[in-house]
Image (cartoon, rainbow, N blue to C red; front, side, top):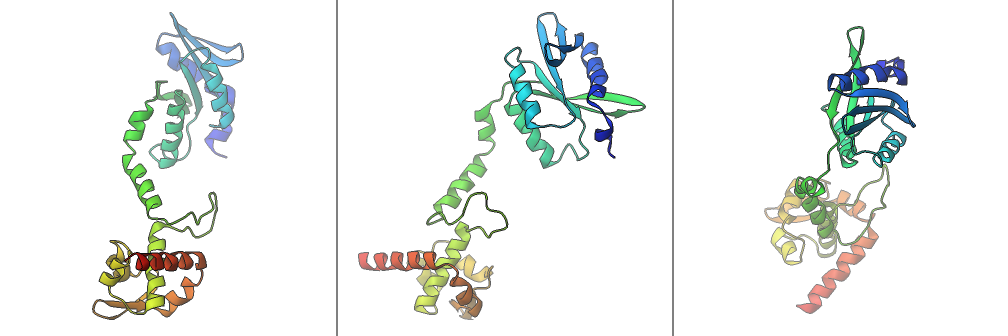
Length: 245
């Protein structure tokens, strides 16, 4: 059994109390349904204690924000690393709720409380500014897809990406027209990644029959048949392009 399971909820109170007392607060337990209340002059802090970081805990803490903007959640220190992505994601979520976070861990023969961060306003624009690259990547991926061929929330199923669509488009034209050069495929609208896709041959769909000329492999021919909707889409698209030129 790990330390988090051995600790009871009431065991979190003394170390958290000591932490706030050292900062000049008067601390009280179980006040009007609040696990802990700390008072210093006009400052009022509320601390909710739980053994796990759950949705119910965060809902409870969010309700306390009707009373004060100084609301903390205190939990046992998790067993996984605090510099892990898992912990960082949880901290980000708590920060978005503008809550403070404390963890309690063994120290000598007792327990100690450690402040992770205080409650503070969350700057959503600043947060989004740090994720401009991810936003651009999402929009680029969408721009590279011809339609929605994936079901959101699917597990253990192959995802249709813009890259794979591009491979299918190239394979489709090679199946219909026979061996082609990257330049010829580019003129048909297969995009700037055409040469790279043919050279890297990630799915094993293409064979280089001579310098600058590629054909569809037996594996490519077999696996291409799994995408009749995309084959139909790209062939119709090619016909339209041919008619307009």
